[in-house]
Amino acid sequence: MAADALWEDRDVRFDVNTPQMRMRPGEKMIDRLDAVEDTKGNNGDRGRLIVSNLRIIWHSLAIPRANLSIGFNCIINLSTRTAQSKLRGTVEALYVLCKCNNTRFEFIFTNLIPGSPRLFTSVISVHRAYETSKLYRDLKLRGALVQNKQLRLLPQEQVYDKVNGVWNLSSDQGNLGTFYITNVRLVWHANINESFNVSIPYLQMKNVKIRDSKFGVALVVETSAMSGGYVLGFRIDPSEKLQTTAKEIQNLHRVYSACPIFGVEFETEDKPRSMEELTTEAVQDDVEIHNDAQTDAFAAYFADSNKEDREPVFSEELGLAVEKLKDGFTLAGLWEVMA
Image 1 (cartoon, rainbow, N blue to C red):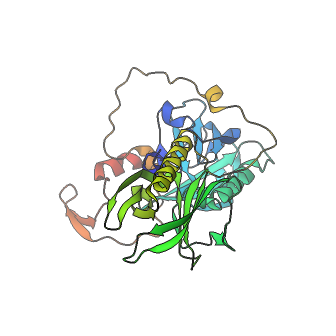
Image 2 (cartoon, helix red, strand yellow):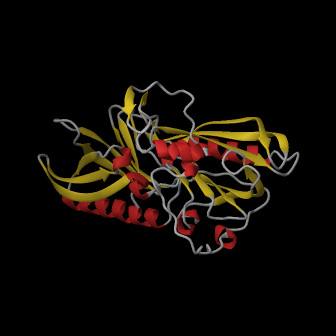
Image 3 (cartoon, rainbow, N blue to C red):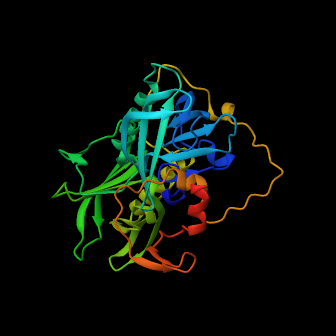
C-alpha cells in the first residue's frame, strides 16, 4: 500500500459514503462517544463521534449520511472554548482548526453528557500520540535515527536484518553505510557520519526493484509522491547479497501493506464496539441530489479569519467590482448558504 492511497489522516471530507466511514487496514477505533453535537454545522443534532488512530469521524444519529471525516494530519490547533449549543445552551466545547488543500476549516464539538471531559481528553491525547509518531509514516532525511552505531527503535519496531557494506548512490563517489531492515521501515546511515541518513517507512514506498545504474546493478527504492517522489539507489556487493536484501525488503513491504502499523498507541478504559457493529446500511432516498460546486457542508465549516485580500474583479451578475472568489466558489452558491 503506497501512502498516495491513504487519505484518512490527510484529508477533510464531508458527507462521505459508508465504505469511507469504515476502518481501513491498520486503522483502529480508539474511542467512541455516542452523545456529541456538531455545534457548528449541525447545531441541535445529536451525533456519534469516533476517534481512530488516523482521524475523527462524526455522524448524525438521525441522518447518518450527514457526517465528517477529519484527518489528524490536517489539524493545526485544538482548544476548548465556550460555544452556544441548541441542546445544552452555553457550554464548554472542543474547537478543531484544520487546514486542507490550502483551505481552513473550523469544527466545534460539544459533549452532551454534562461534566464529562472525555471528548477533550480522547481527541487531544490521540492527536498528541499521532504527532509524536511520525517516523512510522513520514520519510525522514538526516534525523536523529542512530546512536552509537545502533538504530534508535520505535516503540513497536523490531529489527529483522542489519546489512553492512551498502553504498548510497546519491553522490558521484557514493557513501558507504549500513541498512537496518525492520517491520515498519528501511533505514540507511553513512558509516563515517551517522547523521547522514534516511528513514523510509514502508508506507511511503512505491516500488522496490533492482535495475542498472552508472554504478552497476543497484537496489532502487521509489517513494510516494506524498513523500517527495524520491528515487534512491543503493549498491550492495556481491550480487547474491543484493538479490537477497531486495527480496527481504519486498516481502516485508508486502506484509506491512496488508496490515500497516501507523504507530499511534492510546488505550481507553472502556473498549468501544467495532466500527462494523456501529455501521448501518444507508437508506436510499427517492430524491435526486444536484451537487453543484461546493456543498453547504463545505461552506458551513469554512474558516478564513486570516485571509489576505484578493484582487477586485468585475461581476457581471452584480454589475459591481467584487473581491475575486476562491477557486470552486460561485456567487450563486454563496447566496444559497446565506439563505
